[in-house]
Image (cartoon, rainbow, N blue to C red; front, side, top):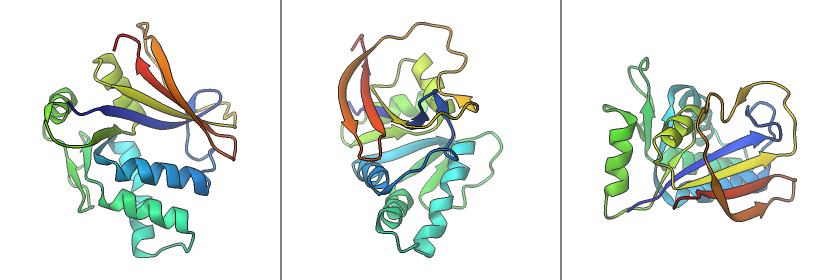
Length: 184
């Protein structure tokens, strides 16, 4: 069975806000490698539209190797977008989901062949966590306090227990904590 990995950047105070996080060369390289080792990434509409920024960098590279490499990795990985409002994706490697997220994820996970499945949207992580479908959480905490924004675990009313399986520290001070649900 394939593994579903929730990977997301978070501020120290638990908010998901890419505008307050400065991703450096090492962070871009880390996420490019994560994308290169997966078969598909799942996004909600909001995060998907933010990620479309990388489409432009593929067409017009920045000259910063780590950003350009991440843009290429983001461009080539297949993306499934869950949205009730988008009519098309405007990205060749993306398609709109045509079934509920639970059905899509269960089918992807049951595929005998294939690499990891990534989910990178806060809203989808919350939905999939409540469905107990996430096998691993990779929470990259950045050394910044946002003070406001969207909390990662907003409106979670049940108790979820995790087991730390690994950590990765970046030179810029960010730390990725790798967790599995404790019941696995």
